[in-house]
Image (tube, rainbow, N blue to C red; front, side, top):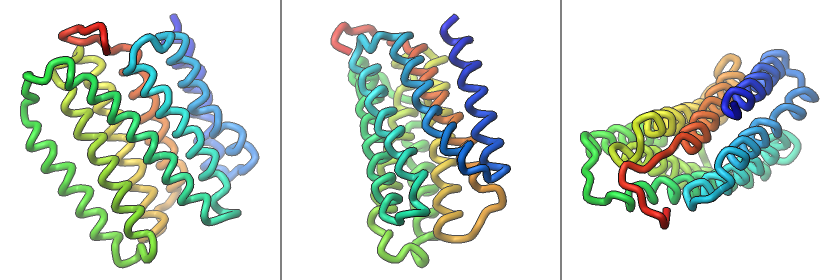
Length: 230
């Protein structure tokens, strides 16, 4: 029941946010954007009571994502807010990584099929994107490189959950990580390389889907090998 209710509420926020992006309605966008993560935080808390470390770490990651959303809303007024927002999302991804690591520890002897292939694909994609952007990054080279490494590790750790949790949770969080990677890639290309038509709507749509899937996957999570400490 909670899943249907909060999915519906999130869908309303999703539609409002996309409309605000397409219409370039700044007031409406500034109203709806903070609600994205707030809805997910409430959903996660009411559905899990944050009983396990996995839930707690995803919850803290979402809080940093909410801070990042707020900071990026005002980057046009003060350019340093982009850096602060980037730092907030780095913290978000670090907490996601720490959560996903718990699933690996629950069954460390299980080998994820094609894991090395996934590592290679993600590494090639992110390094290729970075070298494409590098000539236009200027002083942002190091922050963007660090962010690319962190989000790549996050996606790799999402892959590494295979066989250690139920398949539904695995797929939701993996797809969420992929959408996050897509969202940040579009944002980086649009900001540093070349403008993308309706980039705001594309970035926010993929970002919202990413966070929704990660939270849904967290709520649906069941360990294949259960341990009380996780």
